[in-house]
Picture (cartoon, rainbow, N blue to C red):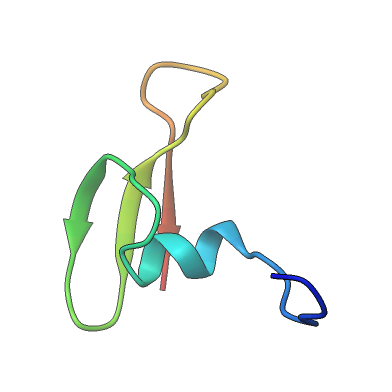
Amino acid sequence: MEGSTEKSCISCDIAEGKATCYKIYEDRYSLALLEINPADISRFLDCA
């Protein structure tokens, strides 16, 4: 987008369904998903 002042936000893209992710849980208020490069096998992100 030439001349655009918008910046890409991966969290926003995931929440809007524009970026793919492995969702563990999702409801109206929160989203839990697996990290791309986790420090250990059971690590995930919870975005509330």
